[in-house]
Length: 261
Image 1 (tube, one colour):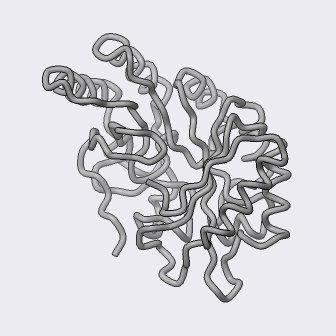
Image 2 (image 1 turned 90 degrees about the vertical axis):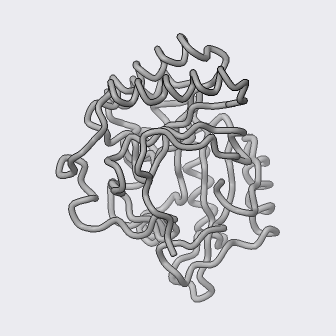
């Protein structure tokens, strides 16, 4: 069964193998997945109909409401001596689709500086908007940018992530943005329908990695129920082999074999 979308703006903190104790900030409408991708491995299930286009979705939380919710949670954490390592913009969809994303980021930075200046700000994004000028400006104001890149060629991209912006435009946007950490999900289905672990698929992906020049690469696989029930986790040995190829190419790579948490 897929996870249920969040009903609140703030959730957690979540214990993350990549981000420590991460306070999640959901910018999407309550209880609704809105995403311009349709990834076969998504733990929130398939994206349906109008929810694939942000301008048709309603109920986006206002920048002021987001600031208020985050401030209250950070103040509570400070009062209870609770450890929070990061404020992570994520949620159940693509956060950069928020119609006032740039203002949201500015408010998050302001509340962090005011209440908890030692905590870093981060985002988990599908990278499709990395080339948009307003999104680029906002992303540049966050401390850490964890950007999805699961494939380097159009066919594998379509099978893994579904229809959407071209893989070329995504790679161009990431290269222009710079200073990003790439997060890549590797999966197989045992029948060759969906598999980005093959030699040719990895070779195309490595070319894209070389163009983006990330600060580091996170390589992982599924550990929750995916939208496509037939998907299987990539073997640990194969993940380690892919990571070694990334290192040979000159980039830092870390493997998280148990999944994306």
